[in-house]
Image 1 (tube, rainbow, N blue to C red):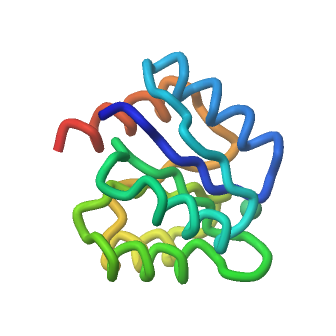
Image 2 (cartoon, rainbow, N blue to C red):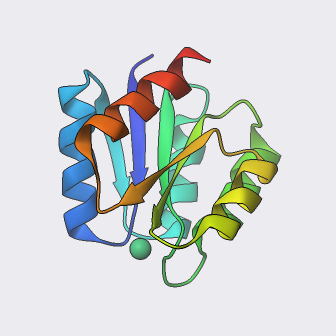
Length: 122
Ligand SMILES: [Mg+2]
């Protein structure tokens, strides 16, 4: 099971995460540009995902709402939140809701890779 899902409204971040996931040996099975698309792709692939990267700040359904819905459907799903700097309190809530870890934009590639291996190994 090495499929991953990327949910992020920023095309640049989508590209960066896609590249990092591929370099780390994962198959990017879907890229969603908003929360609803992310939930639809999650429905299609749930139970078959190594992890999901989930942006916090998105128009429409934000990452926190999406995280809650994902956790309600399958709390075993490994979700890595993607956040801009300075959102520590929001990240804390996400961890309480069930996210496994987080990465901060702008990315430190090595740190993102470390976070991925940490989350997948748990
Ligand atoms: Mg965003």
